[in-house]
Length: 189
Image 1 (cartoon, helix red, strand yellow):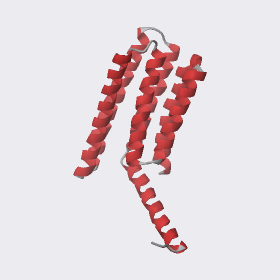
Image 2 (cartoon, rainbow, N blue to C red):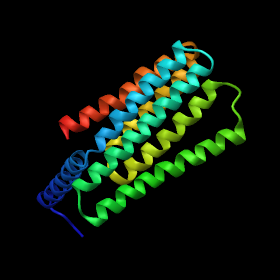
Image 3 (tube, helix red, strand yellow):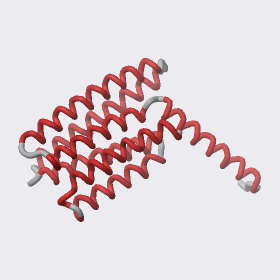
Image 4 (cartoon, rainbow, N blue to C red):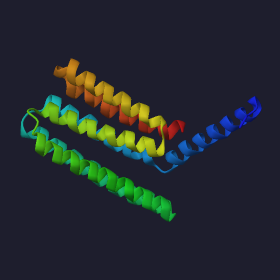
């Protein structure tokens, strides 16, 4: 099939219009809220890793994860009520189940591998989160894949090249990156 330059231009304009509509739809669903919630969990959690010691770090993460999980469930339910369509609610539930199963498998991997230090365990968790992020990007918005790849690359740089400040690095760039992306999606999409 031969397309004239004008027909090709029109087809590309339609594709761009659909991408813009998809971005607006994602922003309007409130998905950005979850990035902000978990960005703050990472910001405070990784800061705790850097500044606190011993069991206090574990308790800090436990409290932050419970708060982040509870806020995510509450916001997911509230957002689900906003959108009455069965397909949207089913998709939202499936996304929730996906993340739950991903974290169960991450926990199982940590049990099997038994990392020698907290930093290695943290890096494994970061990689699992980024796998989930990129998978969601493949399904929902390919633009967000680049953010996931960037945070993965920055995490690896911090882990291998800046081990002394890895936790601060992840607090600022991982947590801060999620927060920034959440606000960017809210304001620009």
